[in-house]
Image (cartoon, rainbow, N blue to C red; front, side):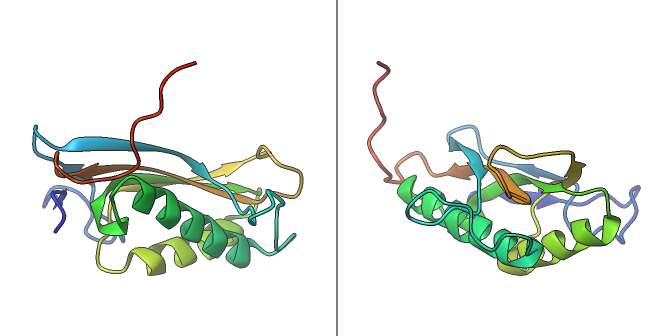
Length: 145
């Protein structure tokens, strides 16, 4: 069961397909995720030129990272979706995929059109912050080198 509370405000437009804010209790453990990229198991960008397919793989990779930290998509406090494009319809394509994956858990999100992303042929990246119960298990903490 998630510890995340999604917040809406009557003073803000109800047409946004996401909550405007979210909270987690003080005793929750925060999980900060690097941007999930459309990389396969060999570290190669897949679905070149296909924004929807890249967005789906980003969500799959985000889900795997969340699971490693003892979290799920329902534990996400907020997301940032980055799309390398100048075309607004491309933003909508990526957003529709991400939004569908989150289902009823409409966490606050920001959608960006950017010039370029980190890997050649990468069109989409999804970042997230999640919160889990303090006792939730995930991978042991990595030690600094």
